Image 1 (cartoon, rainbow, N blue to C red):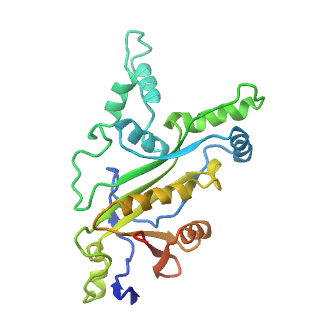
Image 2: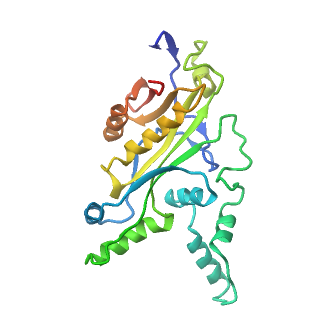
Image 3: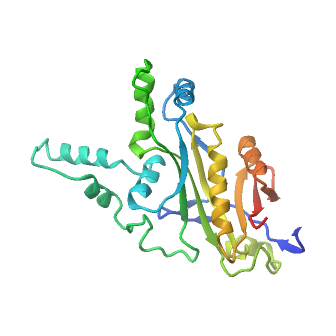
Length: 274
């Protein structure tokens, strides 16, 4: 039993089922900071990024096009250019065939509205909100590292600069601010509805080439600001594998604390009202 400000914190046990951002349901896994490596020469690319001093911004995903960029980044969908190329090949190179990027986006994002949200959202929780870390690709014309430059373009241009993401979803709205009636038996703990109102942070991911640049911190801050803007929810909850020391250090540096853990994974929370 854990007590926070006089209230009982209900442990979150695993596994349980979730569905986020309209993708297929999957077994719940801890909210680790995932790193992606799109090619083997990460060291060379990192040096190139340092010399290029590329600006990085975090934006809330609010368009169908950016929502597709996130799916491309996650490896869940092809880019519009790739889709058009595939259709052209299917037409046996017919030069008459023509499709705009906007048409390709609409076909790739069937079932999504103009804001990039799943139209038939049936979850009892609020719609998940995504934040994307994006940079504006700038390659010095006089740089002689042509192979690395081409690889850099290949890594990020297909998802229009998205190189890190995180999602935030309000869950159990109306259950109180992180307080609940103690469960009667262990089976009650397996029901996620027992956890009080909170913002669940998930899908934290940063590309390998962009590690140790403060990208993860910017993504966490975006979720924190999102939570602070809510009137009735002030707690952020996430989960993490205990062997992911880097992720745990990142979360703890941002103020997260464990409220439930075992030898494999744990749940952490942050009071965003502070």
